[in-house]
Length: 89
Image (cartoon, rainbow, N blue to C red; front, side, top):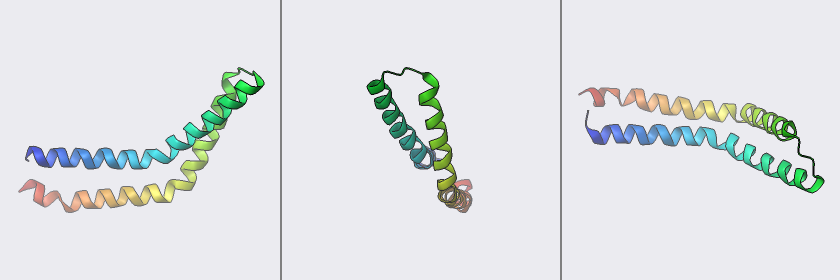
């Protein structure tokens, strides 16, 4: 296996992981920002107030995005398995 192939596999793996994680991370960031602004305006400094909405929003986003995530993972895995013969030889 050449170093170019290893770098290409690692790049594809990292890009796929970022693509899969990005919807949940963006939603957590947005909900956290909104809750922080609300906490700053109302001067309520409760830690669980910021954790619970983020947890619920990320869970809902995960459930909604699950078919898309599975589609991306199946595509990545099938491309990886298809390229195995060329990697070995």
